[in-house]
Length: 267
Image 1 (cartoon, helix red, strand yellow):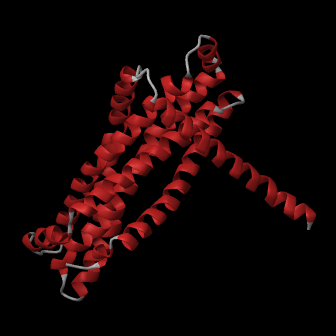
Image 2: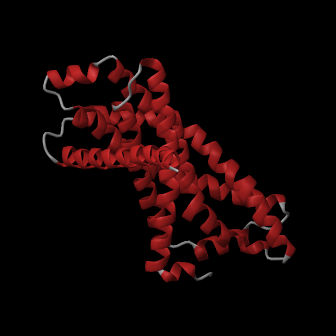
Image 3: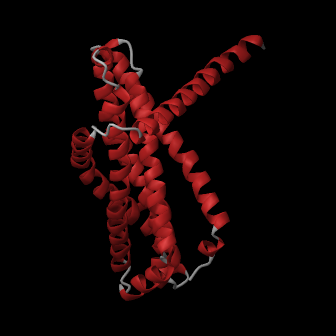
């Protein structure tokens, strides 16, 4: 029995310590973001453009594929059974705006930009570049973490708009493939869509971007063990990011629906 408890205790303890260290990194990042000097502008622009070049095309393809395939076709077939294919637009507000668009943005950003970020910082850690920066009096948090933190939050929110557009296009393609007119799709879509729904989607993406940046930066800054350790840090960053998405999405959505019951009303 003792061996079983020890077997369960060590991973749980390591996970709790990791989460605590990430919270401390988040606190230091917020402080470094708000306290002058604000000299991270050039690095912020570089990281924003770098992540945008990496993630835009995968995000576009994933948004169209997931909304047209697993979501759109199944929902369209179900609505066709009841002769209610014209309600597909209102359903797509719930599918795309509320859930799939933020989630696809988060998954793509973590899998593409987040892994590159972890590998870059991990390689610098292995080469002792971060120690050299601290010897020179340069704060790695302000010079490296803050630009990535801000760029991923901004970019994930920006990609959410495109994910909604391409996700809606997936719904239009489902409507056309079912032989139904497109007009009722947009009528029910805009009847169900609200500014609150769109704002909540953007806020969720900003939170996802912050989670990606903190998790990936932490794993990069704490990488050890040479090239193998960097690869291990990248793998752990992706897994932790996905777990964080699931937990955050559940809490955020339930809180949103509890505080705004009007979103539960079909229109």
